[in-house]
Length: 81
Image 1 (cartoon, rainbow, N blue to C red):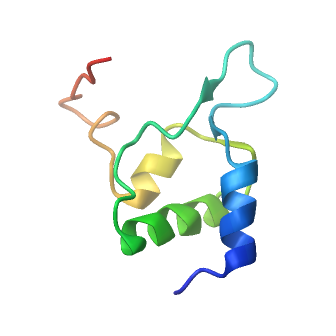
Image 2 (image 1 turned 120 degrees about the vertical axis):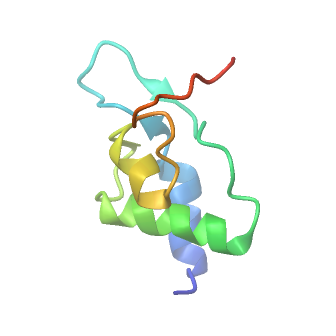
Image 3 (image 1 turned 90 degrees about the vertical axis):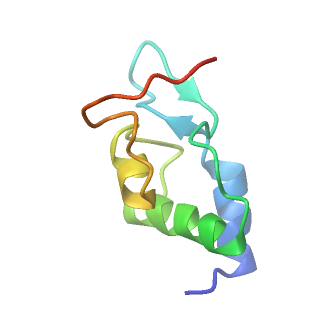
């Protein structure tokens, strides 16, 4: 499904990353990598919409929806920083 410009604008300005604003710590930023093609970008916007278009989303559900769950299934792949 092609994404309209208003939705892209909302995604870029509203989606900060992962966790819950009520938590003591937040993970700000889209650290899952990818999004290099239009299809990957649209997949990420679709996932954000499915999760309610919130400023912060669940750190395990979003990657699962976009198909990048290597950090949350056994064997867990460690990510270098």
